[in-house]
Image (cartoon, rainbow, N blue to C red):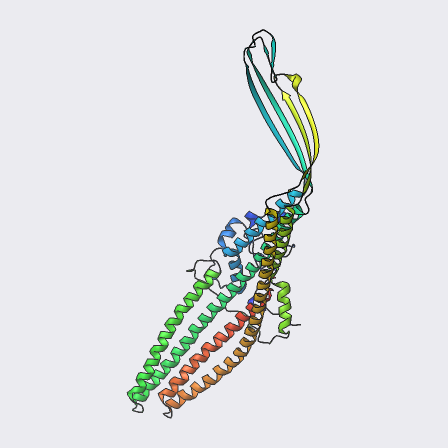
Amino acid sequence: MYRISLAFLSLPLTGLMLSGCSAFEDSSLCRYTSPCYNKSWKGGVAPPSVALRADEQTARGIPDSSKQLEAAEIVDIALSNNPSTQITWFQARSNAFLYQSAKGALYPQLNLQERLNYSHFISGSTGGGGEVDVEGGVGIGGSGNSEETQLITDLTLSYLLLDFGGRSAAIEVAKQGLIASDWSHSREIQTVIVNALTAMYNYMSQRALVEARKKDLEDTSKGREASEKQFEAGIVAKKDVLQARSAYVNAQLNLQSQKGLEKIAMAQLATAMGLAADTVLNVAEPPLEPPTDKMSDDLYYFLSVAKAMRPDLQAAYASLVQSWANLKGVWSNGMPTLAAQGLFENVTNFTQSSQNNRLWQGQLVLNAPLFTGFSDYYNTKSARELVNVSWAQYRLVEQSALLDVVTSYYNYETAIANVASSEEYLRYTQEAYDVAYNSYERGVATILDVLQAQAALANARSEIIQARTSLAVSLAGMAYSTGILYR
């Protein structure tokens, strides 16, 4: 069975990335999220992170321009510096804490309340000297004041016994939100990798085109010199010299333009790596040529792989499950709840100790929303429509994923054919140019024959570079579209 080979990318899948997240590590989240923003989520089995010293973390910013960067190092820097992976990672961690918080509803709630009361009572005249009891205070004589200080301690224990699934639904909503964010982070990891690889191959292509334009300049220089010698010998007219010189100047313009494109491609690569656009990079040549064998597995195999492995498809499914759990939770809001409550109250009277007392109380509380203005009814219908929205969004993501697979599959097959054709094209145009140039030197061909052969050869050089670049990019795109890139 065919497996996509990524060996030429120089991406060792074990020990590739160095963690830069030691300051944010929380071992309690290892079961729920990836250990760092440059790591993929492994579905509950997170790889160990490697702690770095502070000076090592600082040194990971801008690479040394004197050292050639391999593909693995470029991807490593991109994952460590690109803000997009940090965004999805912190979001996943936030959802992990929300999930842990939601599970708190499974436990009893215990609350302690302390109240210190001070009362000052003023009584009016009673017309006699009798004793008057004034709301807990005692006055002697016809009039007088009284004071009272109490410390009241309430300890309340409550536990929800029945809520028709509302509590479990809230936990499931938080859980599926966490799963969706984890898969989204994994997809963002893959996106950063493929963007970095694409930018790297584009830069290599532009760099190779600079060398091709230099060869074009050498060819036009030879043609110019040959036409000048032929003109001095009286074999050709001045027109040949002018045409050869114009071709030489045009080759200079093409070389200058290509050098500008190379610098732009380097800036794009630096940006994809999360670095400043003006960073100077020294990129090594790929150690291996990309494979040129056709797929041994058919398209339907890769479609099935994408359905099983695409992180964004898994995230969309988690969102669909989350919407179902939300529907259950909204429906339960309109149903009765049964809770058990216990109360212990201790009253300490600092003024009259005889009034100290304690209270033990237990109760079952049934809460039944009999009429809420139809709010619960319409909230449930709204939640049901949101389930339909999530289902449509899942189908949309699935269709987009399958289209990506089909597109990348045929792009790869086309790229293989283009590499073979462009190699033949380059070989024949080189031979045609050599024949035309030698014939012109012997005086049996015109300058137009040489210039036409030069133009065809220059085009063939560009075609072979673009074909090989397209092959490398399409192979990385195939791994990305099926969801197996760095899994």
